[in-house]
Amino acid sequence: MPTLLHLDSSARSGFSGEDLHGSHTRRLSARFAKQWLNQHPHGRVIYRDLGAAPPAFITGQWIHAAFTPVEAREAWMRDVLAESDLLISELLAADVIVAGVPMYNFGPPAQFKAYIDNIVRVGVTFGFDRTRKGQPYWPMLTGQAKRLVLLSARGDFGYDSGGRLAASNHVEAAVKTAFAYIGITHTEGVAVEYDEFADDRLAQSLRRAEDVVDGLARQKAGAEALFLG
Image 1: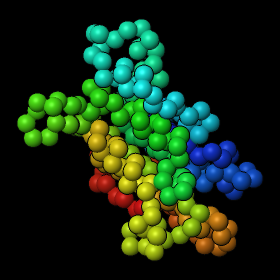
Image 2 (image 1 turned 60 degrees about the vertical axis):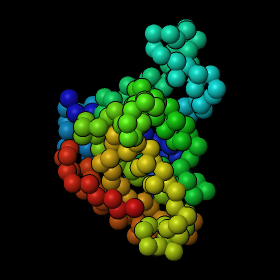
Image 3 (image 1 turned 90 degrees about the vertical axis):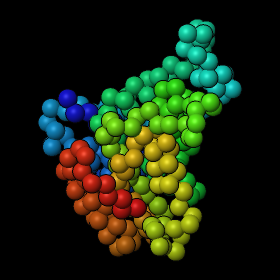
């Protein structure tokens, strides 16, 4: 059964165009999920609203537990890692991950960073061996053909490659780097711009983004990666 993991991380609720102050990224991710289900009527969707219910931040106890061998973990360690275990199990079950990740102060929301910190875990999604020749770190999800669709939104404009603010865009690079580190390298996406201007340019950006989302939702697993910013 094909499985979609649908992640939202906007602090805004609702959808732009429908709800007052609604989220552009929630609007786009919901559109993708709907179109994906049209293509996979027997598929399964796992939904997690990181914006409404952020994962716990990493603590010293979490690090201690994660770096303790499984067979040596105490009960409290298993409790500390329970949320991480659940988030990773959802990720492992997914063929496609669609993530709504707006730009907050040039980077991803803290709630999405907390998600990344919970799924990038030694011995589970990446390996580490200090005695290993060459690279002591390696991704553990390589070869699973997982696909990440990253949908963003920005208040200003010009954040795409070659744009006036490209050097200040730390959203796509941060998310792509973390997912590639664990072995998910097939990344596609699109971003809405001009939110703070609320004029025809925003409307055009939304229409373009929705066209791209529709195309991405129709792609089959293993299709050539296309990153649109």
